Amino acid sequence: MRVLGIETSCDESAVAVYDGERGLLAHLLHSQVALHAPYGGVVPELASRDHIRKLLPLVQQVLQAADSAGSIDGVAYTAGPGLVGALLVGATLAQSLALAWDVPCVGVHHLEGHLLAPWLEPQAPAFPVLALLVSGGHTLLVAVESVGRYRVLGESIDDAAGEAFDKVAKLLGLPYPGGPALAALAESGAPDRFRFPRPMLDRPGLDFSFSGLKTAVLYAARDAGADPNEQDRADLARGFEEAVVSVLTEKCRRALGQTGMRRLVVAGGVGANRRLRGALSEMGAGMNVEVHYPRPAFCTDNGAMIALAGYHRLRAGEIGATPVRARWPIDTLQPPGRRFG
Ligand code: KG4
Ligand code: ZN
Image (cartoon, rainbow, N blue to C red; front, side, top):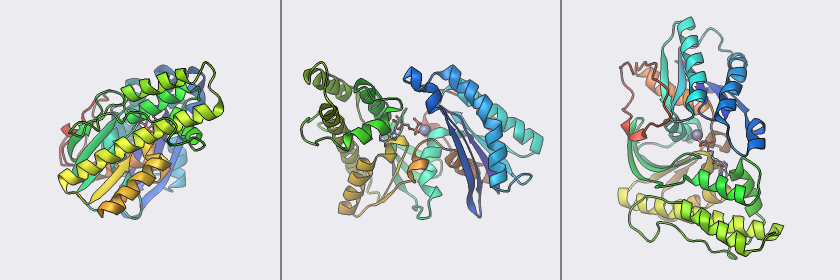
């Protein structure tokens, strides 16, 4: 079965073709970073309009690259969570194509896509796994029994990890999107000049909190003077990154201990962070736990993960013009099955 996947939940127009036998055939992405950069963040209305402009040409290109025009067996689109206007563009195009091609169509949960991204790689893990999902909108620890069987063990009670990266980047004067820029600045920073709090580590449980950490960086930046120099900013960035990485790593260690799971998958944009990957790999090696990551391009939003998640659901006979939605708790999902969503 060959599936076209369409992702438009935020500021990337992304499409891909996944084949059940041959794997990923092609994937393409148009980033709206330059469009939103002058505003310091994503402007939802501009995002929707740009998806409208870019999506159809991208689909044509990906079908050509995958040599799949006329041989698509199903279409999957991101139905949520995300920006509703942006989601509508992808959902409408997906449903129109499915109607025109007379093939089934299914709406996919964006985070299920992220969570399954490690299965796009050659060394895909076996189930069950513990998943750390760290994106711009979510920070979740999920026990994954199999595709569609998700139990949330912990989540952020305020900002998501990626959101914290973006906000701290902004207060350090870095351009949007902040996460990668902050990580790059932190490379030249001292790890121990600023020791920021490790939120929620002193409490039991697997929830996270990042908004206090952001405030701690704000105060430290003020204390560094009205005009912190490049080294001050790099040291602040590094101190912040160390704190986030150590909280995420420690909570993963606890969750692995509590569940007895032997495999960890890391997904979502913050999963592209080099220091986080280093710390988790080191922890995994010490605990005899396999750690799996998607390649960095499949940590951030992409069409391949939506095509893969859609493949699992369409293959099981699931069809559904799922309405788009801004919020959608992942643990309300059911395993793929023959039903109309
Ligand atoms: O998964 P994603 O592409 O979109 C959402 O579904 O939210 O994640 C985007 C988030 C942004 O907050 C971005 O700043 C962060 O991932 N991010 C990073 C890095 N690359 C992307 N954060 C830290 N280090 C990185 N290298
Ligand atoms: Zn995402």
